[in-house]
Image (cartoon, rainbow, N blue to C red; front, side, top):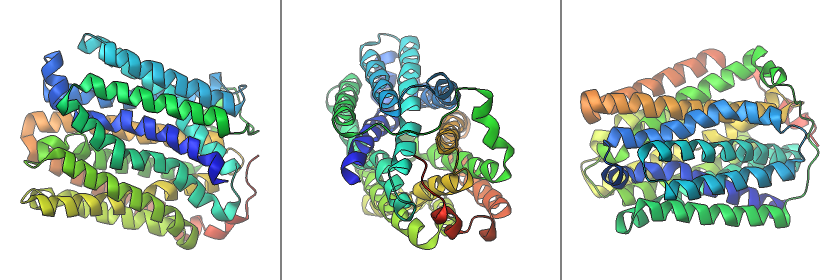
Length: 385
């Protein structure tokens, strides 16, 4: 099973690096394009909004394509989009190329999770999903710090060429190792939103939007929140993401998604409020970043597991909506975080992110009851093939 899933993780590694490395490149991007730091942060915002909007549209348009073909097409579009970003001469053209890269990511990531779910037995589904989404957390540990260092040492455009190369590697891996998987997918756009009639699905998506908005309102502007070496802080955060995502898959299989989600939300909110303490010294910041990320990333496989359990007969659509919710949260984070930074400085960003974390926790406590999603029911459901 793992051999077939690793290329999917590699593709997500490229996408995660391309998405999140922007946070470490704000100073060189703003200097090169002659824009403010907040404006540079909107590159992530535009990517996130394009992903959220295009994901259901592209899923409907590509419904008849074999899943393997869709994975290859999505990664190909992502590669082209990043290559064009590296060549773009103006802020406007950079924004346009981020939309293209987001379109490729929107085709690849939900499909990769659906394929991983279909290839895995129910009792190992949490670990399989953790492995695939682990490409994103590994990007945080390796790709983002490396890209941040490369952008500072040479040029932010060199980092985009690195992302392009990672995408080509992911494309080759999918072509060589991933089999085609038959997953029933509707081509009608209206049917992409049918799961929204289910309150359980709305609860999952609401939690997802709020928790990503909370975390990435801080993460996007991390360089403005710390007076310490950013690359080191990002590396610690990325290492924590790898540990948290790996343990999250195993713990979700063992203890169920609800417990993991609540642990992640409670601890994540506390750590967001502790940003001023973390900024006191580099060792404190490194421990803070590692723990914030490790505990927060427990939620990723748990939310995917929860989605599969809610729509076992419509996994592709459910995971596509979950991805859209994630990037909608990133869009809110970039927009609101940029406004808070411009109006109130770093204090505004900390207050905003902590408040969003509290909102995510309260919403989840009100909408996700333990008896609503017992682990046994999701494990007894047959994998979609």
